[in-house]
Image (cartoon, rainbow, N blue to C red; front, side):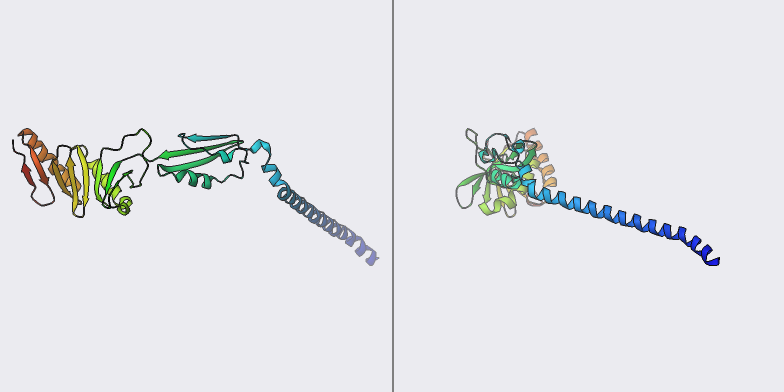
Length: 247
């Protein structure tokens, strides 16, 4: 009798264990089926993705270039997925007049190329001879057809020094432009020489430009009040040096 009671108590435990194992097998089978389906989808994608990306729906129909000036006929009909924005930007930036280029894909069929042109800043009279139109960074740019060259002249530099010195000269130009209308800036190791259209000259150090600007403003105001015509002003020393023009 005792053995029969013991068997009756074990049957529910055995059924629970069998049910637990069955559920575990079903879960493993479900995971295996999901993995097989996922692998199948990935395989199909690898096989047919090229066909999908080359559908006529994604072929380039329009190329927008702002501002106008360059054309990219080789892009027409190509898949939007397979164009190389970096290569397009490099092709556009090969023009010295172009400063920045941005290329965007506009789905489903458009490529937009946005360019920022370099703005002419001055004509650099090069030490080695000749001249070049440059922007504020020192990049040499080609003048556009029908465009007058810049009136400002930069002297005292060689071609290799342009990119290094022009940013400094541009800052100097912005600082002193409200004070005097100069025609030429000559870069020198110890400072700048400004030449006005009238032939007058002003020499300034490369350091302490803000303080020198205040001194120059005071001197010019005093000369104007007294109706004094100067020929030369030098502020590179502790005491200003200047000469007067004969009346």
